[in-house]
Length: 167
Image (cartoon, rainbow, N blue to C red; front, side, top):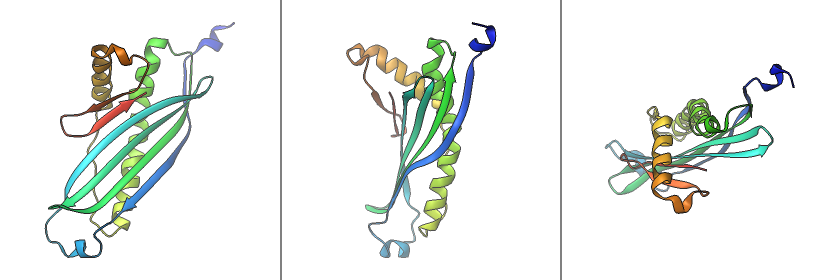
């Protein structure tokens, strides 16, 4: 084998919106409320092998907006990407799929969520940046303390109430 065949490869094959849902259980009455909604955001990250050197990475955001005890809207979006990843050392593969891929996908998901909320008749919501490296590190630490789930997915609840899962 020549050195050319061993060069690390990381390429985006496709980025796509895998799933998007919107619920407005209290419309149209909710539009008459003067108070700004309180937002709850949950984050989920997942990666799986599709073929040799081909992986799908997904970032899911669930955004719930409430005014007092009424749900103004609930949006769940799942942004996915297919990535070619070859000749990456094994110890770098999991961080690449758990940090690098979500960092590429998240801006697309943020834009799609802002768009659907605006189209639903609400003021735009601009989601904050997410530190996927911190989520990843917390997942690694949780896996180290829960060795009984070494091969399974671990779900985390973050201090801000959001959650992260990386398979």
